Image (tube, rainbow, N blue to C red; front, side, top):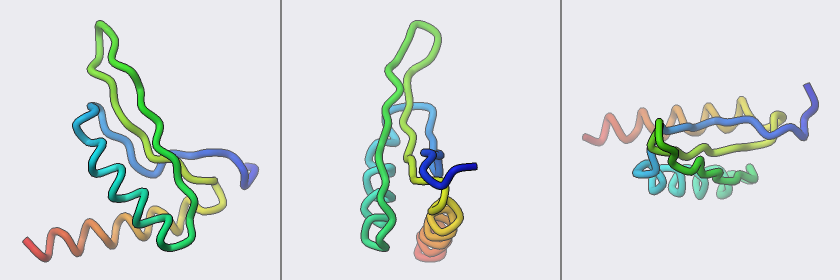
Length: 77
């Protein structure tokens, strides 16, 4: 796999998760990992969604950061 291919590290089935995607994007970018958000428009059969994409070479680091952030959020509750 090329390291310049965009891969998803977060996906959600509806646009209400856009705020979470924005927070995760900021987290990744603060760690030096470029990220983009892609919206899937709603259709008749599905409500739309959101994906957070990074370069494939950054995928494992991004997934680790997201996993750690979610674990910290759970522990804080």
